[in-house]
Length: 333
Ligand SMILES: Cc1cc2nc3c(=O)[nH]c(=O)nc-3n(C[C@H](O)[C@H](O)[C@H](O)COP(=O)(O)OP(=O)(O)OC[C@H]3O[C@@H](n4cnc5c(N)ncnc54)[C@H](O)[C@@H]3O)c2cc1C
Image 1 (cartoon, rainbow, N blue to C red):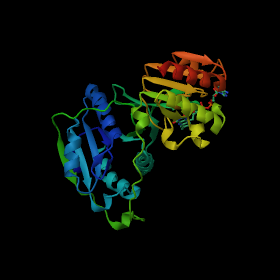
Image 2: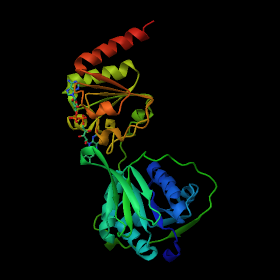
Image 3: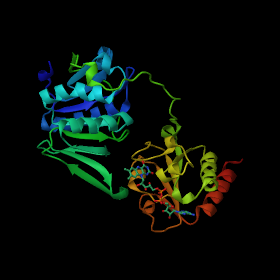
Image 4: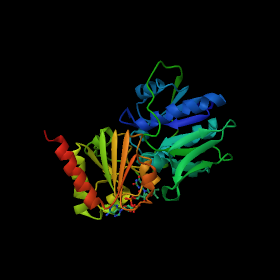
């Protein structure tokens, strides 16, 4: 059955208890756009147990084929079982490109699978292109985020990449045109040296940041909890959400879930205010087309000033309280 898979681009679409992750579908949408000009087909690959309904759901997103690898040992994510299940169909069908979401699971599975297949992998991509000859160009922020590297490995087979959530639009489901192949991989308990005994689901992740119309993000330059409180007060005054750069999270001024950027969340606010942050691409990659971007930084040469609509040069400890006061005065009838 594996040999009948014709698609040259495979997207591994994560599902958790039957729920598809958005990033997988976002990559599917991009893969279909890329495959058209080179005349390739696109397959979505789902792994788990009892997958028929999930596979039909993925099919509605316009892929040519869905390969559902269905086995009791794949019920919960287990990297050894997943790699073992994927290896045989990949070696048999020889796709040119394999794409995964840069989620916790995708960043675990992708490199393991690449190592098993003796190929390379571009991690945390923020864009993908395909040359007319079928070469994958993976766009990755590099050098501390100051450049965008376009990485190609034309001789690698398959060419693999993990893609950041939120960089491609979510496609809409439409009429299915492809087919579903459900197959039971040849797995045995010996393929797995550890077993998932229980999955504990934490509280739902905060999504207010992604949905917020106003985001005030603070950086390393706020200097400590007192400075951070000013960032929170400004967000409060604007009824907005608080975002953070990585150093602010590392210092525990903000939670991991508040980090914006390559390794964090994607935000699409109407108004973004960056306070005492330098504007590294690793952070700004997480900011999608705000109507208005404002930056507060004491260094007139800070890169953030090349990326914002309004730049306020000065100490945030003076500028932010003045902004809060002005906003409060404006909003008080
Ligand atoms: C693989 C990888 C992934 C990464 N992912 C992310 C990510 O997802 N998100 C992220 O944010 N980062 C990420 N980073 C880190 C990123 O490269 C930058 O180091 C980080 O974004 C910089 O944070 P910052 O702007 O807060 O700090 P800095 O670059 O140190 O900037 C601090 C700024 O504060 C200003 N400042 C200082 N004091 C004041 C003051 N009193 N008033 C006004 N301004 C002041 C300074 O002029 C400076 O511009 C990643 C890095 C790597 C290697």
